[in-house]
Image (cartoon, rainbow, N blue to C red; front, side):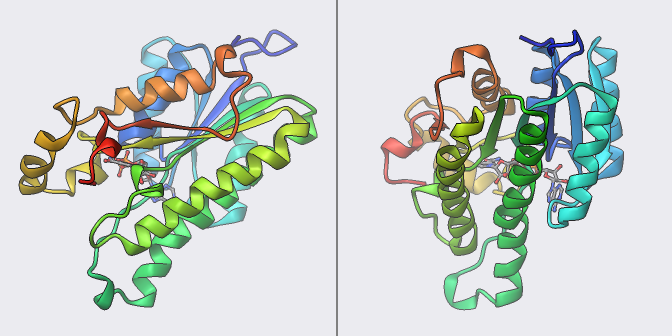
Length: 256
Ligand SMILES: NC(=O)c1ccc[n+]([C@@H]2O[C@H](COP(=O)([O-])OP(=O)(O)OC[C@H]3O[C@@H](n4cnc5c(N)ncnc54)[C@H](O)[C@@H]3O)[C@@H](O)[C@H]2O)c1
């Protein structure tokens, strides 16, 4: 699985790989045999994660990019391909959460979330797809969406809209990139702790929410990385346009 046609390792770019779910996905894909392009806007974090992958015996290329900037994304992805083999997979995890009652939500706060979460997904997915199509090779794109792609959360108007958009972009690209043998899927995490974003929820929210999760616990970044690993594996070759919710059953209840 991991070797490209010329014996070189296949590359997998992970955005938002400096922390949380992206970090766990990067470590997991390296264990699965990919050369991992560790991409994040946080330069110290990408170096740390790339070092951690190498210390564990894997291969990594660190590249800094702000996903809001199309040019930075394209050059970071190209840097990964120069350092490794052809790009086989993109896992796009970079994202932010901002919360505000809707009547207080100002346009600059709305734009911040949409620019990172939705326009950033557009930049990353298309940059990856162009590299895959140019190489004439099959590929996998996995977008990290959220349970909030389908269930609204209080104070999360911009976040919910951005993740709903990510989900529809995923479905559109699954349709349009299928002729190129590129699959496009999403994972939908619920409440994932031990991430910077998840940690922002606060103890009171955790105490109130965890007991409502059918599986009785919050998720870990490694739970999401497992679903990402499957979607990048040969077993998922015929899966496209799907969302795997990794939420402990959270969406089965009304409390999101
Ligand atoms: N933690 C959760 O409970 C949860 C739930 C559902 C969905 N998600 C989604 O999972 C993804 C990862 O979140 P996480 O919990 O691991 O958070 P995190 O904050 O730990 O990691 C996010 C990473 O994205 C990077 N990033 C942010 N903006 C960027 C930008 N403009 N350009 C490049 N990199 C940028 C950050 O530097 C950070 O390393 C996000 O898309 C988030 O919406 C998280």
